[in-house]
Length: 173
Image 1 (tube, one colour):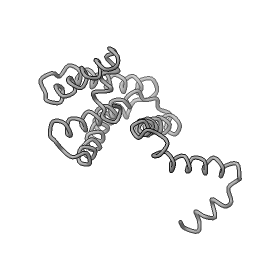
Image 2 (cartoon, rainbow, N blue to C red):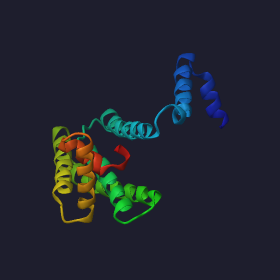
Image 3 (spheres, rainbow, N blue to C red):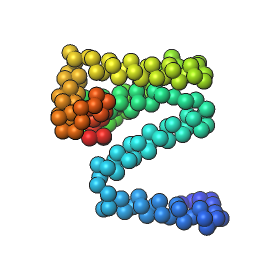
Image 4 (cartoon, rainbow, N blue to C red):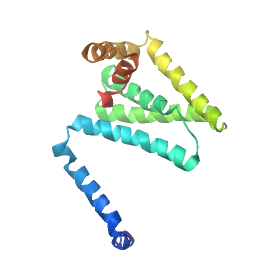
């Protein structure tokens, strides 16, 4: 650590140091205390929440389209791993590229809107992608997701949304 970082930590009030120390200790102890898949789910949704904080808190835009990137990237990762047989590292990198490409396309369409119009366009695009993935039965990805969806539905609930989320995201299984 640089001297500036150490000096900044030392000059913080004690009330800020204690929660940071507890958080660091919890992160270090997590692999031995918490079930790893649960920890992965928590981290995925924490990242999801950070994106909301960035857009709403700093930019002032309410976006309902986050699920588009989240689901699209996880769908691409699952397809690359299951249908193409890619190793997990490459499937995750592929999902990052797909998420960024979806962000570029949605950004080109929605970036000039403000207020409720931005929210409605992002919601509409997310729903269009959701129904595309749900209805596209001819692609190998849809067949893979459909098999996973039937398995998730028979194991847990009959909810469409739950089975789609379970089938489209290997991180949420």
